[in-house]
Length: 260
Image (cartoon, rainbow, N blue to C red; front, top):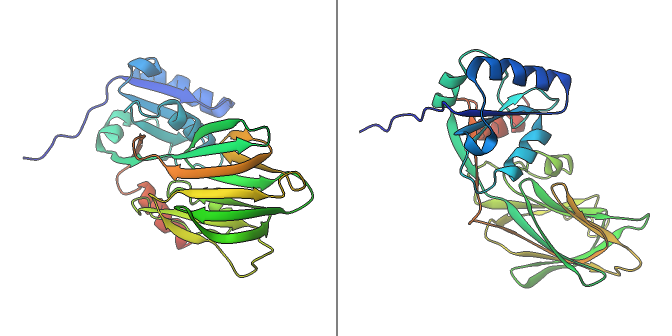
């Protein structure tokens, strides 16, 4: 027996702080009605990828699906904006479940910090001097010393963002992998990163932390002057995204790799 497609009648709209996105929110709310986010069956996000990232964080572990429509600049995670047939598009949309990374960072004062990251966890040099980092995977040292501007750990959902700009690989959304990508590496010169199982634990230790300070960022959450950072995927946490049929995130990732 074929399972009936879900119908979404209770809709909440969120919009970026720009005139185009806010105008779209008002038009859609007038046509389809509008509820608060906590009472809705689905949230429609109007803006760009930045708004989608914020909304995913806001609704993490709620089970409420998010359907984005592009009223921003990039919109890689967004569907095409159209006012007509919204409920039909929602009913036909494909569901994508994603999991975040968890960053655990210890700073120079000995304080511990913890934050989720949907796109990536990145370490970046804070001063004019390059960072020196040691990298361990599941407790085994794999790089005793890397001299670089930084390094990042990207999820499949985030592999087409900062990771791609740093010449990291684009990962299919359903691939059980993480991308470990250096940022402007100086030594070792020929190391271009690694693909890791998505259940790997990545420990990054800052060498000469006083002389070469490093910050750590989980999406928009930053910790300054870190001495050690751990990143791992949290399989117990999830978010649901909706994409138009035939225009899923997997399809977008494939399209990006072939340059169209």
